[in-house]
Structure formats: structure tokens, C-alpha cells
Image (cartoon, rainbow, N blue to C red; front, side, top):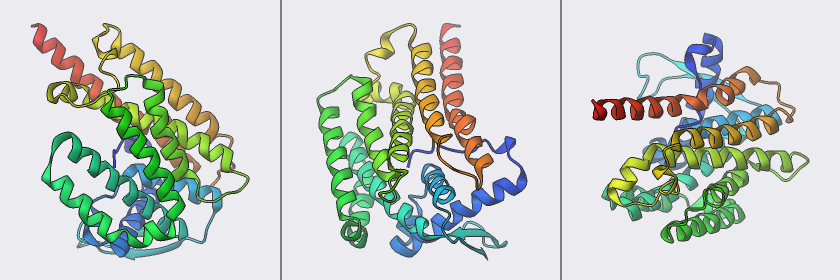
Length: 281
């Protein structure tokens, strides 16, 4: 979907990466099972992280297998699947469907329109089985789209709306962990939304697309402000994360939250600073 919630691979043990990749492949398998090859191309690291958090919390029976696929045709790889994998696969499609709608409205890319129509056609079961969740998330995404069309520059409000969407996705079931999972998803969603805006700011300004950081970008202290905001989002997210009774794969999850999420940020910032230096020469 976005690809910001990823692992810092150099800091992981080989065994840990195999576990992480097993869940990633398991999600890919379920996307293909439910949505075919078009479902597979929506696979994201962000939702793999959601899958692993929920799996660590609820500890469902997880089936492991060794399989080949198109990406790895010559060597079997570890695949991990459980009931939560199905849920996350459906939520992944929901988000990708609306991301395609948004991309089509912004850039008029035919590829996004075609994928949007295909995913909607294939999501009949999901829209029926998770009817209330589709309604809630669809409403939130529609409201977010309306505010974007108004060129709303309230960073907290706009990121908060996407935070509500991620909060809803984290709520796998209504139980004692509802409040913590909702808060965790909320700040994770805010981080993703702002990180996406931060990476796209130049292109959005060039193409006259919406971006909630448009006014802030004019300030000379833009980079410092964004870094502080993103740090606050992840601090709140991590604080809530540590209150959840997670044991399984905790080192992998902490690798993502405390290190991996900053990988793309550092890449974007370094590239931007390098371009500014070259322009000033």
C-alpha cells in the first residue's frame, strides 16, 4: 500500500527475517487465494506488520509450510498462515481499492482505474462479510477525500482521519484490547499519512495535487518541524505498543517500530538535501 512500515533488515537475525518473510509470503498466498494475481500485486509490508502484531496478540494457530511461487520458482520458502491472515488480506484490498480511486482522481492514471474496477469486482465476499467495517472505512475515506478536495491544510485533522482508518483496521475483534489497538492504529495511521505527504510534496506541488504539507513546506524550518511531528507520532505509537501483551516475534516488531519505519524517511531527506546542495552549486 505505502511501504513505510518495514523492517531494518541489516539489524535483524537471519532467523527473524525468515519468520517475517514467512508472514509476508503467507499474506501473498491469501491475497492470491481470495483475489487472484491482481490481489497479489497489492501486497504490502505495512499490512504484514499489522498481521504480525495481531498474531502476536491473539496467538492463533499458525500453519507453516514450504512452498514455491512465481517470485521464488526454484527454492521453497517458509510460509505462515492463520485466520488473521485472511482478515488482513481483505483489509489490504479495501485500502488498495480506495488508494486506486484516490490516485485516479489525482493523476488520471488508467492503470489505477482498471485495478480499482477489478478489485471492486473481486471484493464481493469481503464487502458482505465485513460489511460494517467496509461502511465505516468507506465513510472515513470519503470524508478524507472531501477535505482533500477543499485543500484542508490542518495537518492534525487530516492525518487524524487516516489514523481513524488504521485504528479500525487494527480492531480485529471487539474485546479488552480494543482501546489500546485503536490508539496504536491511530498513531500508526497518522505517521503513514504524513510520511506519504512528506515524500510526495515536490511532485504534488508540481502537478498541483493536494498535499497537507503545502503551507508548511514554505517555511525554512520545514524539515525540522516534520521530523518532530513524525517522531511524536511514533513515540505515541510505540508507547501504546509496549502496553500490549506481545511476546511472540517481539524483537521483529520492535525492529520495525524503532528502526525500520525511519528507513524511507532517511532516504527521502538525504535525497532532498543532496538535490538542494546540487542546485546551490
